[in-house]
Image (cartoon, rainbow, N blue to C red; front, side, top):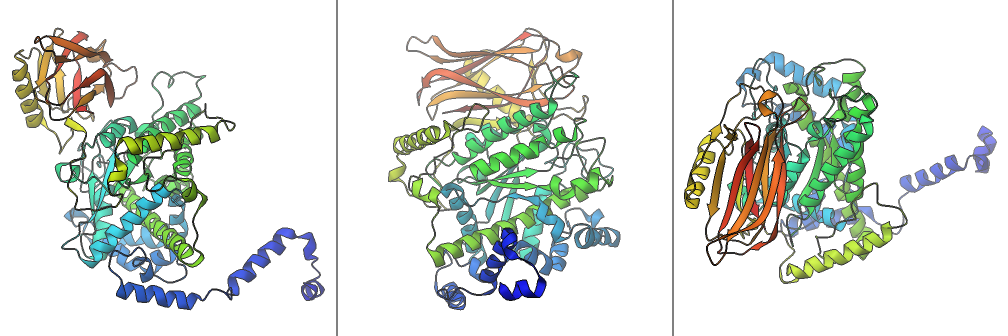
Length: 613
């Protein structure tokens, strides 16, 4: 210090922050004598060759030690990333002009320094999501080592019309374009980079839905047949656009605080999804929960309001320690300040193929950051025998713990008590579900049926369509002995972009009854997906749902009655969900009936149905 002061005339005692920074720097450049990093690297490499492919550290040992960065991996692999980004599923995009645009974006417009903005939060402290991260990297390691006997990483993406690619390909006005949308581009990017099917991305987006609908889809395992038995390794919430839609009853109010209204709405919807996803695997390791913020507008005038979703997402990601990524943060200044239309449509929430490609790149870069931080933590655990406070306090192997909900009513003075209550609740659930008698491992080949539903479907292009809906309704209405009056399957685009596949009432006295005999599981919940729309056709639209069982005297015993409105004041068509809680449980082997009557207006549209426990 004396020599430095004499040479430069800087009294370091007056600059404590600078002095601290220099001390930290000296620790970084001078290796700590009690730790031999080279020896650790040698052992890691030795373990990589001698241990099984299931070793937790094998994947990390493939990379530089003791640390590496996402930027380093991204920059050193840019040419290969560019080639892996070419979409062979759309031949019209395979030409020199498109290639030049791709290279210009990747090498000039979106350098690693900009891509770093995508990373909003990486999970690091909670034992639940650490187990999820460790699980996904173990799946990847197994797949790389022995692809014939190990499945790819399963990624389920939930979202609305943006997620399914509406407006993605120029000149094509299609309700969906799965090959152009970012989930397929992400799958192509990863698999073409590794020259193998390392991941399988399931695009489960449904136009006009929000996080509330997706929460029920996750909670009740509404997955494709091939995914329904084992569930996804990763679930992605990509509802930033629809969750950012201002409430219809406030949008035209000049005094309404839309910034706060959207912030609260987004927090409520996303938090519901997070809690459903983190407990969807019961006693097993939960899926890694990823938030994909792909929203830039335009749905309200205030820029702070347009950023409300991102604010809510970051708050919740840190509270639940989930993985948060933002495409919006990568290109927000380019789009808003410079007016570049490459990534943003000023007149519509849907955008072009280059925006979808950049979303795939954002997730790819953020995934490298996740790998980097995971390996750093594994290194620290191995060298320092480090365990976090959260690990000491958590119930061992209990993946059912959730922190108390993050709401305006949660006060600092109460949070410790609420946390203790949540721990007790998790332990009670752990015992009640018999989790102590089940392995907490992650055997990907286990095929036990973990779906809690006897019926689970939602109308969507490429999914449950007109033939399936007609067959379902005809079959179960015949079981009831009550003829269908004034209901039919509909699939038409006359009213615009909305998802129009559904079961629709066509007259004022429309009614139908479904009956399910000898049900295979206990049932205490029925969830209805329905369309809420606008215009004269939908005025006063209202349907009554009555759920009953048949008692010993062959009489109906009503378990739930609920009226659902199908009319919206806002000029948007949204698919919403309503859960009908039953007054009791209808036991396995019993009969269940659902009667639906149109009690208001001249139409109502049912978009899906779940009958579950």
